[in-house]
Amino acid sequence: MVGQMAADETRDGVALTNLDGPLFDGAGATKRDLVDYLDAVRDRIIPVLRDRPLSVLRVRPGQQPFMQKNLPKYAPGWVRSVSLWAEASRRQVTYALCDDRKTLLWFANQRAVEYHPALYAGDHPTHLVLDLDPPEHDDSFPLAVRGAFLVRQALAEAGLAGAVKTSGAKGVHVFVPVVPGTATDDLAAATRAVAARAERLDPALATTAFIREDRAGKVFLDSTRAGGATVVAAYSPRIRPGVPVSFPVAWDDLDRVSPGDFTLRTAPGLLEGADPWAAHMPAPQRLPADLVEEGHTIPVARVQAMHEGKRRARARREE
Image 1 (cartoon, rainbow, N blue to C red):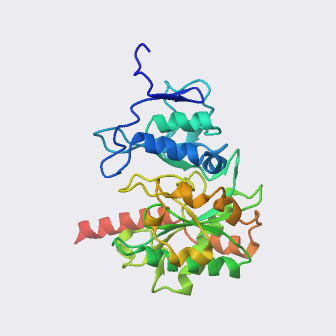
Image 2 (image 1 turned 90 degrees about the vertical axis):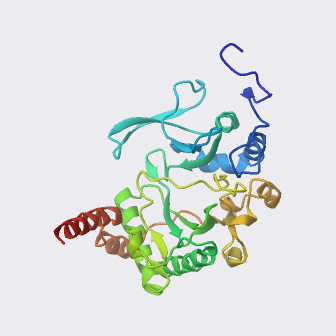
């Protein structure tokens, strides 16, 4: 092929190249392993990507990983896309939609290791999400698990239920499906309220403090994953040593697993034909009015942190 590398293999009409090269330093896996894994779990991961603007984290040999939001101009014409205004960067972004095996294989060949879909499909949000980030030390995952149980209790007391998965790093994600028509600002407010209620259940363990230095070694209950935010998809690999995978876990099993149990090599065998993310996910739920009302009284964490950061900077300059 003129201007292109010869394909090592072709699947579903997609040319796959350099399959036997290392995936990234510390992966202990090749690009072929990535392709094989994503192809093996395609019937699980594509449903959680479909119709959602997609950002991917890619890694090229000898380079640092980078986040790709804009679909490259060289992408095949059959890759579906959607153009949206990105408020943060003040520009129009053309996002890919990964709706089928062919597109997934194309991304795999581009060394897209991590898949970060938007939390909305079409024009409406689909899930309330809490991202639980434990403090920075090697054995912190059990703290994230304890934080997840606080969130589960807060949800239950509000009449809600969610599903849980490992983040593929050291944290945990809790997803609560919401009914179509849920307003984005109400969803964001409810997320803040759930986090605040979970924090009140055990303030020695959990915190909603957005500024890292204010967390005092506690589990951060991140309530900012609403609106245009993304979260790594269930079944997505991560660019970390051993290539762990974000993997669904039953609530009753959460305190008996560790992130290293789920990797690019082990995850397909653990599925055994099942789709635990779909199986564990409750039906879409309506947000309680009192939860939404409470959330609207809680400042947006990022905005509050920005103002506090400016205040502290002024105080330091005045000292």
